[in-house]
Picture 1: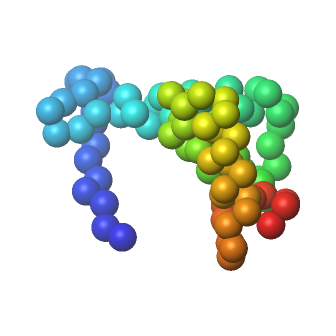
Picture 2: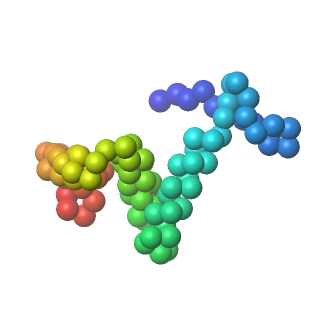
Length: 88
């Protein structure tokens, strides 16, 4: 996978039409909130917490029932699923 990597010099500006860091900063703010919920996170599990944070953000507008159903489907999927955690 190739990414178009852009850099912003924050001593000059915080965003530009070509690049913005707000999305990633917002995401890591949500991950930090999850970390505060669980306490410290071991390095070996950190990637899973990132996936959980992404899942929570992607499903934030959904109702509790919709989130429950979506997570239940992910857990029940045959094969490997990041959202199955230790159930898989």
